[in-house]
Length: 135
Image (cartoon, rainbow, N blue to C red; front, side, top):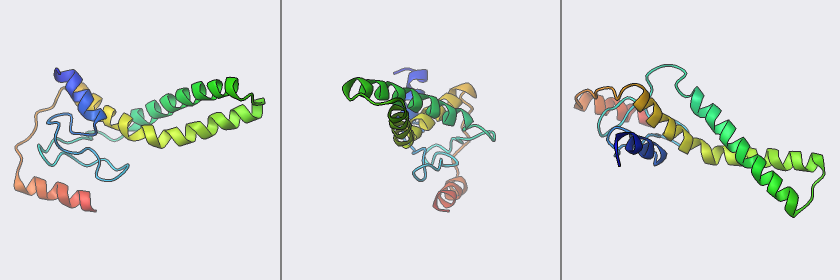
């Protein structure tokens, strides 16, 4: 895979878009400060994650709408029942999709920021990333 495809695929796999080895998430929804393998910094500016949240909302709402309309043909609902079914599908899909979209967003930010050069990995930086991950 080429550079762009590899960076995006590594993001979807929840791996560092730069090296493909380090994890993106410290916990279920908490993004690490940077990669423990190559010290690549994931978040550069405040508000970097706004796009991933919006993308997740739109994607999960679209999938929920399609599933609700398919269910409508299988088991006819009244309008209110269809609305609640779509809402419950959307609420249940959001957490399933969010991590993958956020990982993809890390890959997009990596490409958008011009594949910023990675600083030399120092023992102090690795220790700081480990400390931040555990807090």
